[in-house]
Length: 203
Image (cartoon, rainbow, N blue to C red; front, side, top):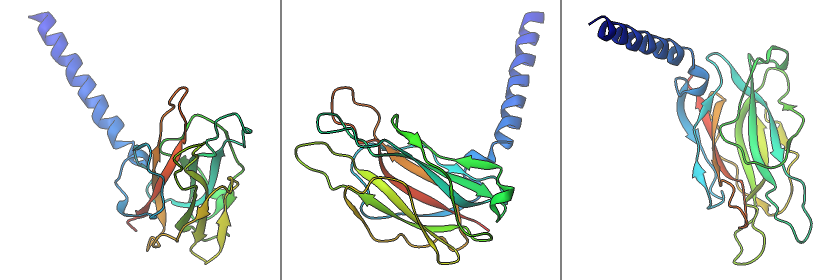
């Protein structure tokens, strides 16, 4: 009987810890998410990963990219592998958090690029190489972001393919993202990051 009571108390404690931890993890949930904006030219491979959000009261005002440089004629290129949004309370100096959803396995992170002080990310355009029947597909290669003050920032990605149309703007700014990534395929052709959604702030 004592053992049964101890087991129940342990389960109750674990449940309480789970509730507390989940309550503190709003930065990775969808508590501040009202809608998403997308582009029409994303790559066809991979699966949508988990969404990630800035903490409540923060806006995405900067970004950095994970990029694999060109690998040469005989090796497999993946180009753009990941996107990080950097969250702040309207100014870069108050940055305390970053979100990235899922990223591919290759490349290194670029330096941060920030919207001008007081502005934040609202829309994006994706540079994508169209699928080819033969050869080395890379899917998404670079990204541009538009800030709320109208300025535009282009990432340090590669320029294979073409930039598509801009997404619709997030009315109150972007507060998170969700990525579509192809996981490593061994000896087969890898493309890594294929597509992305911006998640719009609720207020």
